[in-house]
Length: 571
Ligand code: ATP
Ligand code: MG
View (tube, rainbow, N blue to C red):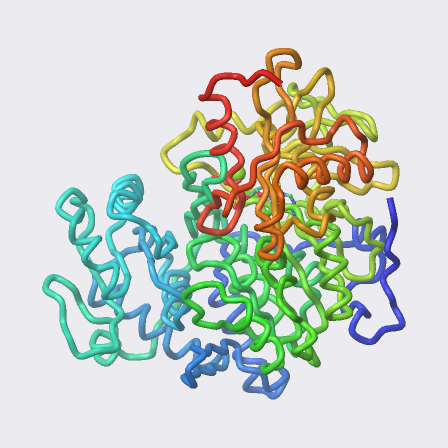
């Protein structure tokens, strides 16, 4: 494998916070906090004080644009002012009490961030949901969580009304609407905020109390409700902010993820604000490559975070039309990033894509940190917050180079940044633990240098004629072929081999009219040339698009089910 040496001489590449991995691994310590912790009071209000005393760069804390000239810039002090008012709305006008649950479904608008902070100030537990939920999804979330309050917009309110009669705990419905229209049974956020004071005393929250319930992406099944404590993200995401995102108070971070996912909390709330950075938000209702590239060129964004699927789309554009003068650091997380895509991005921007590996259940588990040598295809080294080991199904650590479960040591002390439970599902929670380890459900191995290599989700690994094949290594080989825009590789039944590798391929537009049987042969030859030949896809199907989660992750499970529900084909 090629090791890319990070260019320390290039200004943009010089890390601001990272020295070398071993030093950080041995010296990094989280701040010692016993008793109470509240992110609003202990972090945000401290930045507001610094700001007032002239001790912070003059960046806004939140910078929102809608792409149509509307813009909001709030300092930490202004964030404090508005969120204290909203906290008073929650407690005085809505009678919400500490640990009551608040279900939030809003697109990327500034109020989403205010609700996050108001929940912290009042000790109410936030459940962010994506705006793409159906009435049935909403019902499931409201009932399972017993949410007392919902905050949403005029487009989603009718869906909530459809199911609200079946949710007896729900007694407060707040709508965010900038039009003058009113909706029966709903209270308008603007009206409510105009009637309350901006004085509010943040509640004392014990550090282990529940803070938020996030939904997993639903890549393998129904999204799981994952509960985190007050200090989990609030302190635990220091590693993400400081080392992986390499942020300081001068930086402007743009992370494009949907407000329904923990990833938005990771990057666009906690990791950025722990470091005092500016959180940049584009309203962008739908991912649009040219909007993204224009925004990166136009605004002083220093740090960019998006999903691998988005990078795959961006590199299809003519990137030479844009200049990226402010951009210094790019990261991705949520899925493997193809080395080919990293290479193309580097050619266009001069910057590496640094990878983060983590889950809704955790903070960053491993990553490539700026200043560290990158091994393309590896997810980097373990976060200093965790003791990450490759373990067998009983939780026994395996030797270097051996594939197994990616696990996090939880004994003698469970790391505080690990989720507390899957809400209402103690059995599922217990299933994640084996001996001294939390098992991620992902397979991988660690090489002699301590780099981790992601093989696949346990269910996605293909067993063909005695070989174990991770879908990602085949997908990486395929995307190196000029005809391939993206692909998903799954197992498919085979009468002789049991299962074989099948690739679903989305072609680049200019290859759609090419002769398909010739393309199949070319692609098979190509894979045999660039990786171990036994991995080549014996079956190939061309598709217009791949099934993905709302957050853009490939749902191999869907393709696999389709394959295995049809009769095995003869070769
Ligand atoms: P569900 O648990 O509902 O099936 P999900 O696992 O996709 O969905 P998330 O918590 O959003 O939900 O995603 C975490 C998973 O995403 C990880 O367990 C891993 O499989 C994958 N992942 C995250 N980052 C990376 C990465 N850098 N490389 C490879 N896989 C990654
Ligand atoms: Mg998962």
